[in-house]
Image 1 (cartoon, one colour):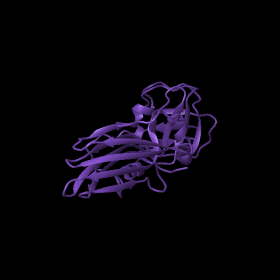
Image 2: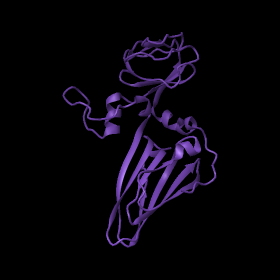
Image 3: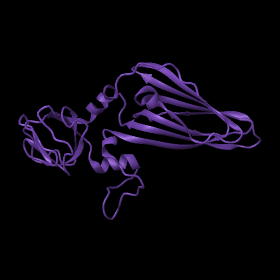
Image 4: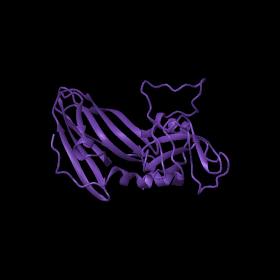
Length: 251
């Protein structure tokens, strides 16, 4: 596998700023310290209508407790009450955003379901869902099965949907007995395109290409091309998995 020289990339937070803004309905700072284990905070600069933010998300983006995310249970004119409690305390350095996205809709977006999750319609999944990784973006797990045509070269292109952007952390590829593969991952670094390429020999099982480890963060991928060369007498199915996060709206 051949990796190019490292390219200078902006921080992960910088790349996602516009996506966060696209879902933000309000923001502010905590007015008084809040202990871990409590379920509210106060912002004395606000004058909200009661429960206007119910089922939205609040995320602490800077200061003490940064990175915490919670579903809003309700609000008064200047306080937010969350479901559960804050694992880490907050203080007046804590800056928050309120995101226009409710929990049920996030689960539908991630899992492709068409109805709310309830006791009668339970969530069917074998993996625990970490909310911090889903909003304002979705987890990306894209398993693909691709056919390498016998005695020929087969090229398959993959793109994010028009209103999506992929930040890819890892790619796994499996090749069969008679097929080699070449991956070309086209990345967008603030409008400057660059390629990451990898050549995969025959009979390789789940080769991991760890972009996050190589570059220090997931890469913004605008196109992934897989070129399969099959010198056998029959078609062979190859395996490809793309993992990372998927921003809901491109900018």
